[in-house]
Image 1: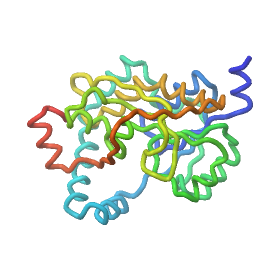
Image 2: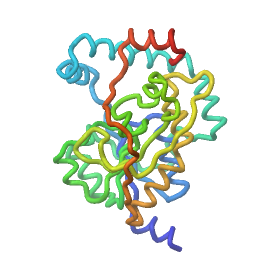
Image 3: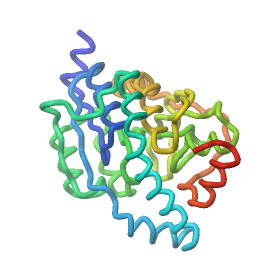
Image 4: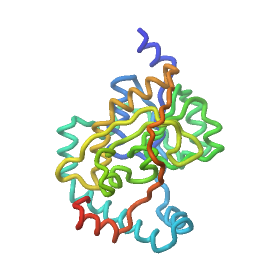
Length: 261
């Protein structure tokens, strides 16, 4: 009875750009909690991303990161069999189910997104693979806002947390975090973390899928706690650092010298 009451009174909204690993999380939430409404934003322009990175890190680093992003996209095409094996072995559902409620918006920071949330009236919003919320958008959120992050925070904030843990010789922190959202980059209070191990054949192109497989239970528990008003952030006692995409030359060097791809 309690679970049914939560489903009826407090819907769950997920804001995302989409992707197989995100749908695996969404479908796992639906199995445990009930219907989930998805607000699907248009992916951010790579040109705008490059310009923003260049202002922060310089054009050489930004161009190198863009090269790795392009290589990763190409790698996914050659790793379809391996990805399919992960999906099959872990019994992941990586596509929207029939009847899935989807609200398409240009950006998580758009007025369309705020309107969609007003229509859904969620008890919790989970961000999963979407752009950083502006302070204005965050202030308009009608309920607790959590973020599913593919890395162990605060040690691996930003991009490619699993890759950087392995590249840094810190395989014990190959994992994910659900945390509260504040104005920083993955700096909110930690609500749950899940750690696992990459398997043979995993690369930067498949780490997200591997992580989603061992993080479904942790994500569901964090969302359930938020719906029940049991938000209890903890301090993992880790140093804090923000990471970005590796540069192409750094990625190739790490792969050749450490076997981390």
